Image (tube, rainbow, N blue to C red):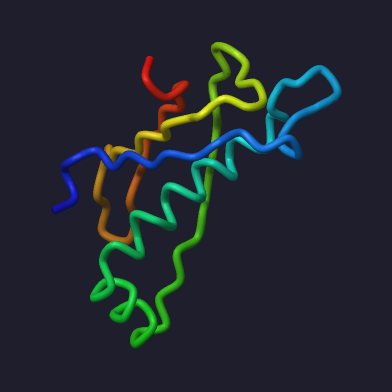
Length: 101
């Protein structure tokens, strides 16, 4: 259930970019959040369990290594993988690509 990488497609919005047409560095984390949210809500029993037990998903640490810029209006694919399950944590990794590359 959790071992297969999850892929989420979206588009770079004009509002995501700076005056040079590059995606602002903080927006990458929004793309990660969109993928994580879509993945999570694909497991309604997990969401209900979290709600019933007052469990909240907290982001404790994030980082991003920028290799190439994303531009408007790129179609992008976010791949989310689970690197590690802890006793009270899940460690994800993400990769953004221009869709189809």
